[in-house]
Image (cartoon, rainbow, N blue to C red; front, top):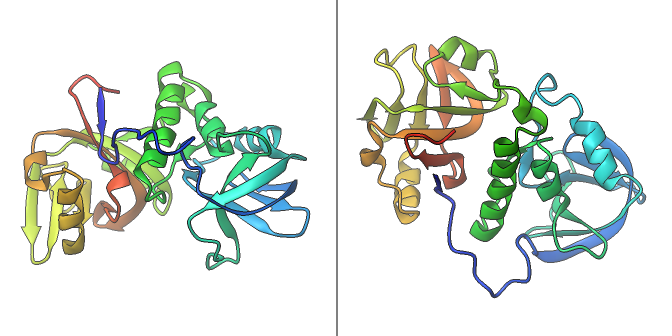
Length: 250
């Protein structure tokens, strides 16, 4: 079983996960990429809660999104209707008359990866469950064993420099240097894979029930954008980036 750090019991007060405030509606007329669409009025929508894998892992991701949303009327929902720095509206897209976002279906088909930009726990858990279903059934990108990188293979991780990547492995040590805490996955601190935890995140993780110091010798799965500082690094800025795994979880 996977203990998802973002998890919480689903409460009965909401009809369906990710059912945020309505931000508008429109008809999808163009698929821009595996996570972005254009509406008939010209608005570009960046689908929240998901990230596109490298094309070689999910070559049909764009086609899958097209099959789900092209020429469909959608209702946009989210917590903020402000555009991102690229002028896109970030939202969950619900095909008119449905109570599940398109993101859930894309994850369930294994076309995309669960993202980390969902502060609502119930919604994040729902998206995580959809991804876990695809992984268990080996659908889409999960047909390949190359999606989750081994923390013991730093060169393989570095090959995805700048890309959204999922890494899994055993934390060998937890070290603090100044105001920064490091989860080290190799005995070579400089060349091995490590997760960087800024000081401000320590209290956030503690509030989510994660005792960082207790992660030594625990198996975890982390996700985010890979950076290079001699060895591969991943900075933890949200609790949704880390999952604590049981010994036999895949």
